[in-house]
Image (cartoon, rainbow over all chains, first blue to last red):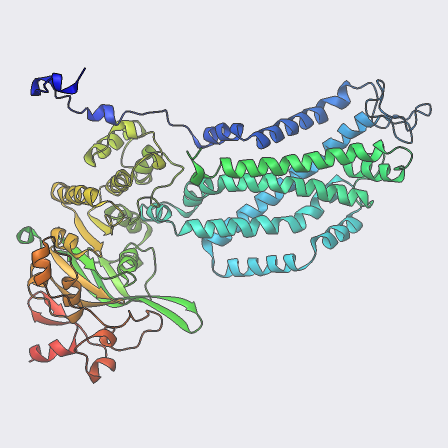
Amino acid sequence: MNINDKKITPELFRHVGKDIEEMESISRPSITFWKEGWLRIRTDKAAFLALIILTLYVLLAIFAPMLSRYAFDQQDAYAMRQSFSADHWFGTDSLGRDLWVRIWVGARVSLSIGFIAALINSVIGTVLGGFSGYIGGKFDMILMRIIDVIYGIPSMIVNILVMVVLGPGMESLIVAMVITGWAGTCRFSRGEVYRLKEQEFVLAARVLGQSTFMIIVREIIPNIMGLLVTNLTMAIPSAIFREAFLSYIGLGISPPDASWGVLAKEGTALMQVAPHLLYVPAFFIATTVLAFNQLGNGLRDALDPRLRGTD
Amino acid sequence: MRNNVDQKVMLELDDVSQYFQLSRHKILKAVDHVSFKIHEGETVGLVGESGCGKTTTGRSILKLYTPNTGNIYFKGKDVFSFNSEEEKRYRKEAQMIFQNPHASLNPRMTVREIVGTGMKIHDLVKPKEMDAKVEALLRQVGLNKDHMSRFPHEFSGGQKQRIGIARALSVDPDFIVCDEPISALDVSIQAQVLNMLKDLQDTRGLTYLFIAHDLSVVKYISDRIIVMYLGTIVEEATAEELYRNPQHPYTKVLLSSIPVADPKQARKKERLVVKGEVTSPINPPDSCRFAGRCPNAEKRCFEEMPSLCDVSPEHRVACFMIEQYFRP
């Protein structure tokens, strides 16, 4: 049909008007910050895989030793240095102890040290750093100089010294790591608070008469929460790694108690006869550290408000 | 507007200075010995180019900074010697609207929380009535109740600024510092927000200190205008007087820089251009701050600091070259 055939007359048109309420009706329901973070981390394949692996490790660490018929320190002179088999899934060590059970008992120690040390570091660091950044002045100056000193001494040396003084064990490992570890989080959260406290929404809260405590709790902490969680996730693998290192050089957990570092150390001695004794714990240390780093990367992107709605 | 202004003084700044110590020998004099009064119900415009201390002045009034010299009086009382009860009342009576709508709302709070916080702090409504009160405020600034559960990033700049205004109004203040409330908005939105501020002033009897760098906006809304240059006041007059009869060379330059919509008239208009750069506010000399760029500057201008003197009732200028004709 030719367009000229039909004459366009005003009667063909009708005034529709505009409906203000309709224009402003919500296109999608509002979702909270954590929910949005969860939705976004699910689309990040590497981070989501890392999350699955870590969940699996945690569950196995809790349940695998309970479900196995062997105890972690149960020796068996007839089954020494065996390789993988149906009886002993990861084989046995030089005393005939089941490696599958020892790995998961070791995971309990390694993972808890990682979590606890990182958590204590984060809490101390955030509280001190937050105060330091918000209040400033002399307190801030002194704290920052203390941190400079801590940074100036190689942390590994401090760790080794503390372990020598306190003796082996889980508590002394945590203490050793906290003594040096809080400084990084402290400096980081101080910087964040320093940046936020001059933001106009914080000034607005002050103008409204909000107390300093409530400003920190309601205006500042929610805005650095994402970064803190990310930071915590990144701190866990380094604590696990540090534990493994200290146990490896004989300063951490001592046998028959197991941790991944202890197992790797025992495996090194028999590397030529039974290489699986080294490879298995090394595999778990490597995958755990890698998974935490991937998860931290994913969280950083997922919880960053500036990246909201970009994907 | 001018005739219904009550002559009672709402706010008075007396010799206020705000310095920032940058390093041992570097002092940034953001505000340097500034004095002015704001009467109840009037709108005072504060203009000047970026970095001249307008925002700092506004923030000092709301005690976000502690001035190095001088006093600030609100309804006759020194704001820096308030007891805790007076302090709380001041936080309810004096409010601020911020410059950047994208930075002035907490991204982790819903609109309901943002607008409701002030009412909660000052116990203005019962928790049950909160939603109704927030909704009423949002309606006043042209938003509706569907917006209450949303987060700031879901709004446009103009809408965010409306939320910021609703927050300032939530505690029912008498006095509001508007810190360039429209400079971050599109021109089409600017007029809407400006008219809204004007309407709110009429219905609520508000007093404004309106900080801006756009002279046409300031002329539209202000009763009186104060012109600042590098931390000092150079001229102060009623809006009409200032535009008809500017005295200070800096004011003249500022006024000539207002663009004219009609190109024929624009071509006729004489454009004054200042030479040189803005003097740095770091360790400024104790002389007329504008002297280095002033076309009429004489030797004295580089040696002494001129003080404000009356050239006619309600018109004060700080300039030696003008002062000599008026001094008896």
